[in-house]
Image: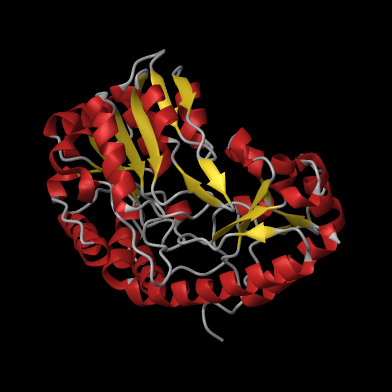
Length: 389
């Protein structure tokens, strides 16, 4: 049995996905509910990573740690090989995760009351972090046609007139859309016209399906590259979220200096002892595992979409170009979100994410995580169909 077929019991591993459903969904007992919600895979990390961590554990001292030059080179080589993106190691700053990295960027380069622009439906921290930092969030809702999303350019540009920073989800979460180079070029041009900084969250950029291409925002920025902050991490790619490691890439030395100063002031400039070990091993030796994962996910997507649309008349799912997430349109079922979630949790005994979590534009959709062994996926789909039957 290979790594992607074996079912692992995660119930006693302090897993948010498996152990926090009562708190997240407001239910008394979730012991019989199958979690298919948060973006956390039920697959073991690549063996080279676990081997490297095991070797590190042989040394019994866990003092302060740092990101070595070999770690930076490994990341640069990875970006060049997988995405054709040339990045200097001097452009890299490291953080405990993409979310805290985003918070640092917002805190440094915007002031209280400044406007931050987002394009819902989108990953919830895009609007919750600015709000918690006292910023005003501007919403330019994406247009949607049969599950395909696009930027509403006139509305987007009108919002840029007030914005100081725009946060881009590239690839897009929750839909799995890949932004075309032409879209990204227009986005950069409009932001430059209105002197708006861009934070590009590219954490899902390695989870790209066959025949598709991820375009890093930096690769099309040209002379405007200094207004871009790119957040990247191996944690989503290799299922290492609990290791907590990410990097900010920015070509502007002044912006890097200001971010470094902020990290020093807030004590966020160092990583835990295991992060550099996992980082280096993943980027240097994790590619075969990732290629196998993408094959598994391709089969899972085909299977899940076919069964769900066949067994629940009215469900519509546009196959994602990236990620291991399905964005399920249930609007034709005529159910409110409260009714849909009640059926899933109480009748189907399965936890998906409600679309409104991603903003009002997500209402009528559900986000489903299919990164699990086939046996678990089959059971999850049976529970979903039972809930809606």
